[in-house]
Image (cartoon, rainbow, N blue to C red; front, side, top):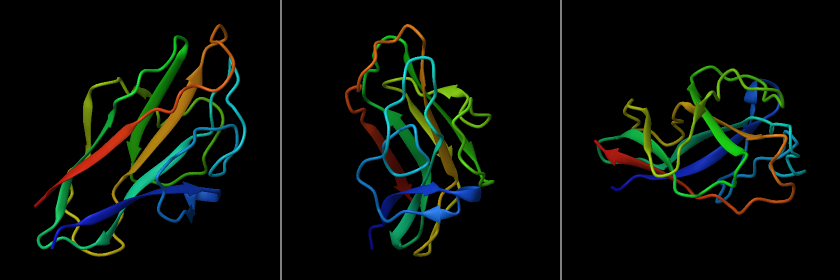
Amino acid sequence: MTSVLSVRVFTGANAGTMSAAQTTVDLCAADALSGGSVMPGTVSYERWVALRVDTAPDRGATNFWVENTGDLPTGVSLKFGVTDDPATPVNTTSTVATMDLASGRRYIYDNAVYTEVGDLTRYLVFQEVVANGAPSGAIDPQSLDFGWVEA
């Protein structure tokens, strides 16, 4: 059987509240699924994300990757990091999301093999960083592609 995975967002103390399956993920000024623009000179709340196995594959799913296919405006960057240890999302400079998620580059973030319904990949932590000189207002939606290999 082909695996089916969904994107889940984690909020609250120790990233302990898992959302239902998400088709969009907002980077915002609140530790919630949506709420509030990120203003120039600030950072978004960290967004803790993992993929969840909804339909188990025949042999397993592995080599999980993420790719940013969008273009951010001048003065806005998207940081990311990977961890196994949940923490409460912060709206200060992240100690986990420290690498630039450059457009057009694929990043493998988990090479474990997942075989059971309910299995979760490692956490991907995202944070939007908006420079003081960046124009205010909403940025265009960015497209992050996720993928994996059937083992």
